[in-house]
Image (cartoon, rainbow, N blue to C red; front, top):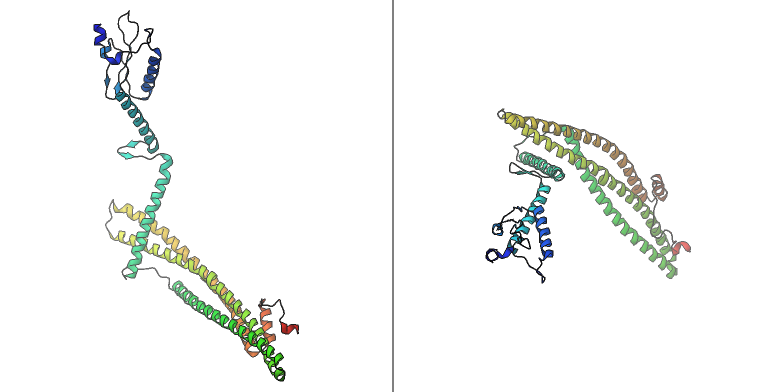
Length: 374
C-alpha cells in the first residue's frame, strides 16, 4: 500500500473488470512512443523505480518498470497532453525547416546558397538587369552631355549628309502624297458632278424637243469628260499607291536601320568616353582591372558601331537606286496622264494606262447606263 500511494498517477494503468491489464491501450501507446522516437528527440532510459520516470521540456523519458517479482503488470509512462502537444509542434517545425533547407540549400558563412535548379535562372536575370542598367546609365549620360555641349560625338560626315538628305526627301515625298490624295478626292467629286450634270442634260434633251440637240451635245460632252476623268483618277491613285509604298515601306525600313545605327553610335561614344576618363586617372591595382574591362567593352561596341555604319551605307546605296527607278516611272505616268486628260486626247490617256498595266475598276462599269442602251 505504501508503494502504491507513493507511485505517481501517471504510472498507473487501467484494468479490466477481470483485474487484467488493459493491454490494448498499452500496445497503442507503445506504438505511438516508438513512432515519436523515430521522428523527434525522445530519449529512452531504464529505471529501477517508477519515481525516476519524469517528463522534461521537449523530452519524454520512458522505460519499463522493474518492480517486485510478484507484481502482476508492468507500469508504462503516459505523457501529459501538454508534453504531447509540444512534441508534435517540435516535430512539425523540424520537418518544415528540413523542407526549407532542401529548397534553399545550405548556409555557409552566413550567406544563403540557392539550390542548383534555382541558382542558374536567378543569376542570369540579375546579370542581365545589371548590364542593362549600366548600359542605360552610360548612354543617358552621353546623350545629356551631347545636348549640353559638354561631350564629344563621333561623326561620319559623308554618311550624316546622306541621312539628312534622306530625311528631308522623306518629308517632301509625304507632302506630295497628301497633295495627290487631295487632288484625287477633288477630282472624284468633280466626276460625280459631271455624271449628274450629264444625266440631267440627257433628261432635258428628251423633255425639251426644241432644244433636243443642244442638251444632247452637252450631255455627251459631260459623259466623255467623266469617262476621261475616271481614267485620270485611276492613274493618280496608281501613282499615290506606288509612292506611298516607297515612303512607308522601303524608306521606312532604311530609317529603322538608321535608328539602330544611331543607338550603336551613342553606345560607342559612351564607352569611349568612359575609357578616356579611366585612362586619365591613376593606374594601380584597383584601377587596372577596371581599365582592362572598359577596354574590352569599348572594343565590342566599336565593332558593333562599324558594322551598323557599313550596313546603313549599303542600305542607302540600294535605296537610292530603287527610289530613282520607282519615281522615274511614276512621274512619267503622272505627267502623261494629266497632259492627255487636259488635252482631251482620250486615246493617249488610255495608251498611258496600258503602258503601266493599270486596270481601271470604274463604278458601275459592269452595268451599262441607260444612255448606252439607247
